[in-house]
Length: 258
Length: 301
Image 1 (tube, each protein chain N blue to C red):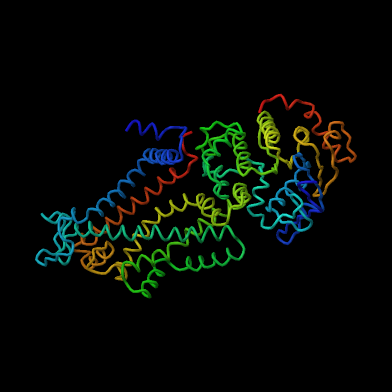
Image 2: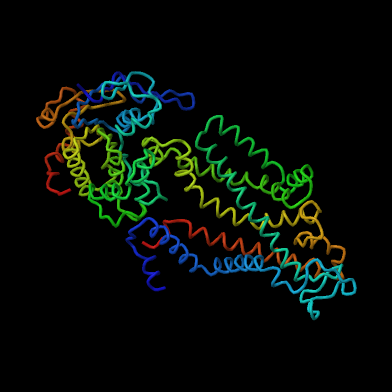
């Protein structure tokens, strides 16, 4: 049975009398412990799907089910312990006036989970940050370190599902590989389910078992990893995306340690 | 002492308390590097000391009248800053009056920004009709000149020091609400607010724990810059006889009582005027200095 089911999801925004259909009738299903990718160019609606799942974008049609149950609106605390998200820009996703300690202990405080000292230390260890970073502010960290903090924060509530909104697009290439390998390691260790957005097929190829290609808010084609590496695309659009990043997919991302 | 400094400056604090105290210490070091801010701090500190020990410092009873020694010029032996029209020692009255000034300033500084922050952040965070209603109320308060509105409120509530404070606080909050709302609008759609919402945080936690800290520095700076204005409005209400009542030695009231003698006995009005000037200047300088201190990004790496 699939863990995440999105059925005919439609998201429309109204701004100044204009109606923008960001996502139109997209369906996908992700089984437990799978890593599922969403790929497409900017504005194709891939991030909006993640935001809709989290309740940060309005669902105007269709259904989202997690573990067979329709998710409640507003999402609530039980949902927070099931699903967490890592945002695209680590420079914008950490509170600039909170220390790392405050950022990481906040979810524990919200859910009334004790023993926050040990849990914060453990979280820093898990994402490979030194413990003495604990009382630093985000501006004292590099982009890659910040993204590690954001990943640690998302894992504080021990969710089963992690939504990744282009988690490495704001980072440079070497740091990108480190963060991706960290995510893969955490997925193996904790049996996480990933729903990951990227515009980069090389990243998707490194991370995901299956991928949905999107264009203009619609699903174009679903590909398995084998289809991707064998370049077996049916649609012209998926083919052109593949051609754009084919040279980098041959490059070795695995060489860099997490 | 050296050990304490090392403990405070430790770049890798081991406990939350140490980290917090270390931040305070760094803030203090930054403040200390700014000579203007330090002079502001010294003035405000002096005001606090003078107010705390007023009965000990004051050479005379501020209320004791001696009509045989009325309107003596500054420098008269026994009356350093001269005497007023009832023969009361002006220096003693200024020293005792610092308590009233501090009381008014303190109460306004606690109530008005609190109210402003609350209204501003709630308005900015929720948006929609909440924002429209709260901001129109703010507009109404802003449309009145502050002194006139304070006058109207005191006229309704009756003269007295508490009512003066209440009137000033009720007229002082709209600018804070505006500042807080503007800051809230810039952060409410940010990813870090989305992240904490996604963690299941309730609205009070988001507003108090995540929105208010981003607004707080600009509001605190505004408060210190406004303190001068608060002292002047309190003085203005005193001057018009609607604030503190005679014979209490409030600075504005003292200026008011000296205006009959402004040309011949200038010191009666000038001395309390100088006191208001110096204290206002002190708060302004301190406010400028706090601007640097309250931004963690200016911390040495």
